[in-house]
Picture (cartoon, rainbow, N blue to C red):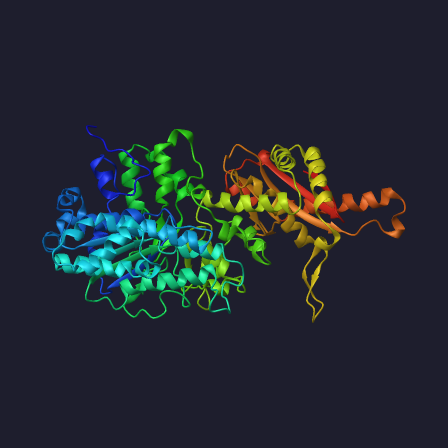
Length: 594
C-alpha cells in the first residue's frame, strides 16, 4: 500500500500526527458536537491517556484564527462534510489551550513556580499581542512581566481571564478556552498535604487550601462571569473536584462524565473504530485477544470502549505479545495507599474473580471527605479507569467490574504486594506453590502451601466472626480459609480464570481454575475445616482417619454434585481435570487429589 499511515505514539499534537502521516482515529465530529452544545463551559472527566489532550489539540487547530493553514489537516475527515459549519466557524476564533498535567509539586512554593512557567509559555505563544495597538500599554506591561516570570501571584491567578480579554480586544472575536488535566495540581496538593487538609489558621493555610484558592481565580474567573470574552470553554481531567473547590458557584457549567450519554464515544476507541484500525494494520486475527486485554469500558450507554493508549502500544509492538501498557504510565499512589482499608481487600478479591460489585459513584468528589469516607475509593477507581461501570444498581448505585486483563494485573499485583509486605510471603515460594498445583504435583503443592500458611496465618486471622448482638456466625472458619486461598491463587490470574462459589452441576464449588489454554489442567477445589486433635484421639491414627474421611468426603462431594461440569463446558478434557480437597486443621492444611 502506497504511503501507508503509521502509528505515531507519544505525540498529542493533532498537526504533528497528521503531517507526519500518522494514523488518526477520526473523532472530528466531536468538534461540532462540542461547539453546538448549549453550555458555554463544560468539564469532561475521563481516565488518563484516553485521548483528552489530542482531542483538545484537534479542537484548537480547527477553530484557531491564528492557524488558517490548519484547515488542510481536516481534509480526509468527517467534519469536512459539514460545509456550512466549517464555513462559519473554522479558524474563526482566538483559542487558549493550556495543559496543567505537569504541575505536580511537593509544596505550594514549587507549585506556584510551575504555574509561572506554564503561564509564561502560554503568554509567549501570544507575544504578538504586545504589538497590538488595541491593547493599552499598562496591560502590556503586566503581559511582559508574566512572560518574564516576574509578575506577582495575583497577576498569575487572573492571567487566564486577562489573556481572554486581550485576545477578544485584539481580534474582536470571543475566545475558546481549553484547559487539559485541570485537576493534576489539585490531586498533587492533596497527596502532599498532611491531614487534615483544611487549616483552622486563616493566616497559615495548607498547601491544598492554597491551590484551591489559586484555582478558584485562575479557572473560576476565566469560565465564570466572563461572557464578554468567552465563546466556549472545555476542561478535561480525571474527575470533578467537588463542592468545597473551584466549581461551587458556577451556573454556566455542565459536567459530562463517564456515566453521561453525551460525548460517550468521543474518548477511547469504539468497536467500529477498532475494527477499522486492525483491518488497516492487518491484525484482525488478534481481535478476540485484544478485546480481552484492552476492551471492556462503558462510557454512558456505549459499551466496548477500548483503551487507546494500550491499543496504540500493542499495534506498535504486536510481535512482543500482550502486555500491560496503560497501567504502567501513571502513579496510582492516591489509590494504592487506600486499597488495604477495611472491607476493600475482600471486594478486590471479588473483582479479580470477575464478579460485579455495586457501589455509589460520587459525581462531586470532595477530597476533604476522603479522610473519613472510605467508600470514595470506588469512585476514584472508576474515574481513574481501574474499574468501569456496566449499568445501574439499586438505590442510585452502579454495577462495577474490572474492565480487562490489563487492569486485572494491577489488582493482582496489589494482592501480591499485600501478601509480600503485610504477611511476608516470598514471591518465589508463591510461584512454586502455584506451578506445582497446575502441573498436578500435589505433594509438592501441599508442602509449599503448608509453609506459606504456617508462616502467615495467626489464630486471630482464622477466628470466626460473630455478630456482636445476636452472636450469630457471620464469617465461618471455612469462609476465612476460602478467601485466604483465593488470595494466594491470584498469582495465576494471567493464565487462569479464577471463579469462586459458583453453581456448577448440582451445587456450588468453592474454587475453580479454568485455564485460558485448553490443553492445560483445569482444577476444582473443595475446602473443609475440622477441629484439632481431640482428647479421645490420643491414638494418632484415629486423628488421621478423621482427616482422611474429611478429605474423601470433600472429593465425593465434588463427584456427587458434578462441580467439574463448568470445566467440561469450557472444553477441558476429563483427563485434564484435577479434583482437589483441602482440609484445614488449625493452621495446617491437608491436601488430596482424585
